[in-house]
Length: 173
Image (cartoon, rainbow, N blue to C red; front, side):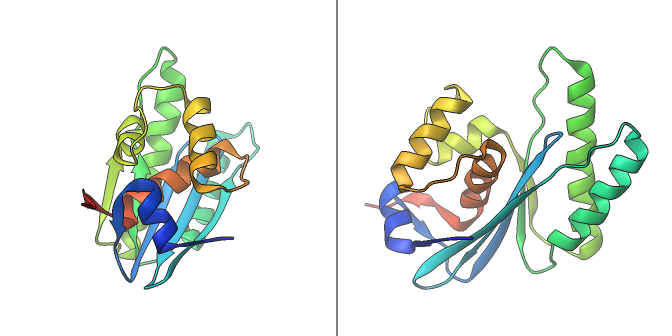
């Protein structure tokens, strides 16, 4: 778990924190990162982890994934899911699309009202990073900007998504 003051976050990203909001960011991948950001008047708490189901049986993997999501997703939160990017590997695109659909479906069934898909590049740009920069570069810049010590790339991507849900659209003056 990570706690960061609202002042530090607002200064780092030049955006105000929405008060009393909870947002779950999910970076769908074969090893899915997730981050639940909870904002109050003074600080934001980030609870995070990953889902990694090792099985050659894809239907078993899907069922386990859904079961784990059911324990992570809560009704009273916003949800941001990383949008699937279609690269050269159609099987990866197929898997990631299914996983994103599972996240959305579990959230829908739990009654989550605000859910959306965002491209990784869009989520990064929102925080002031160059959207098309290499993932590794963005992550190093992100860690440096916040002064945190998280080296899990799936979790960092999920934190970036969650921040997109707790920061206001407008920039500070």
